[in-house]
Image (tube, rainbow, N blue to C red; front, top):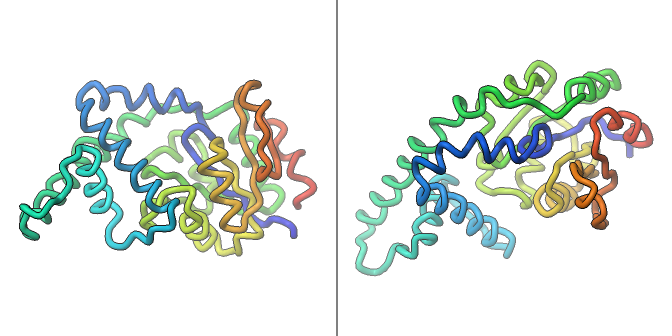
Length: 240
């Protein structure tokens, strides 16, 4: 079946992953334990959802709960329900104020990989819709990367209550683009998160492999593997 839309991951796919870590470095220096447990919390949520656990309620509240779990200070019997709720709310506000509130400023000057915009213009020339799906809030990244005017939709996995590789975020993007998952090609740099997740959601997949060592691995669920945006439109002609 021909594709009618292309979805893109952002961090590590449209710009180098090293850039993401370098731009986040001020947060790591300022609040190393906060950032460590924030990363651990997201890993805990990913592991729980990968095991088939159904997660309900607000993503940010669940993230705060996983943050507590990472600190090995989970809500135990000596906490009243009221105290537990207050503790989670405090952590949630701390993450919002110390991490999320600073992202637009930290990522205001990121630069895309070479030929990203050119490749997007070629895709638009084929009549394809383009969407963005990231595990992190996008903020002003689309503008900084020079693709905001070409994107038909963008969203964050957190809006679904799940992180990649759960299929829910990918299906959510499909809804935003207004087409079924089977008509979408999703492009990402993580085989475990992007390719497996998009495949499980019913999408076609393309792996952006940025290094020769990375490309030597085998990726059975990737329909396309590429390393240069200049070659993307030619690789996709058989899917149009």
